[in-house]
Image (cartoon, rainbow, N blue to C red; front, side, top):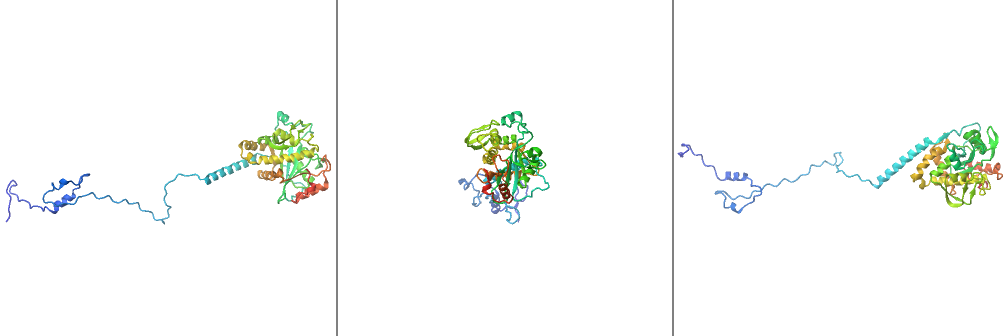
Length: 404
């Protein structure tokens, strides 16, 4: 039997009542509490009838943070690193400085190699001595006034060309022998007034060969007189010599007694040490008309060797090489001051300078060709032969042939 409810619904049948237990609980479980609102004591009083007490509902906690998956260690890629600021270590700074220094030296080397003047001084000819042991340099100091103004000639007291006999002559003629073994190098002076045979011109003073035929005839004359094969040639004139000395701020020397040259008028006071500028240095290596040089040319060549030792030591010292105010003027003056053989190079010149550094300390044998008299015109044949044979064979120079 079906009961009906007849009222405002027009006789419609009432729907069956829905269960009040599980569905309401499920609906209430779907409702989230308002943010920030906790459980209140009034909730017990306002709980709808017929409902069961529910456990408080809380928002689920956020999922734990997960790191991105790591790449396997053997996947072939280097591990990633965070960028760092580049720091300059001592090794990197030192390496950079060394590199800059090497580049600077290379630049200087190239500059000198292509700037120094060249001349054909050494040539083959019939009967030329064969090369023996060691290396031989012919070093010439000429009285050339090329590039000097009248004021320069007066300041340097170069003297009159006509009064000197005219032409271009040599005030200094030296042989530097660099051995191939541990024998000491030798710096040998050839007095300018030495009487020798000049090819094609008979017998004359050795310095006349330069005036008659230039460097080539001088080299041939020296080879004929000594029997030594000349491997390298270097020449420096008056002006170039003075400029080099002034470029490095002068050269320290010990002068034992006052020197007053009656020919040039140059005076150098005694003192140790004292610094000789270009003018005084040129006067010192040329002086022979003075009470301080009673042996004339023999004393002059001894002073020349002494000064060359001091000059080379000064140039090679750290005070010159590391001082730009000395180094750059030296480099700028060297090309105009020096003349080398067309086959010579800067590394040959560097080897000569290194070998000659020992002059001041006794590491180089310095001597003059043995002569028979104070005029230094004639050589002692027996002692000269002993000297030249020792140089040919790279053996020690006998003490009895050393003249200083």
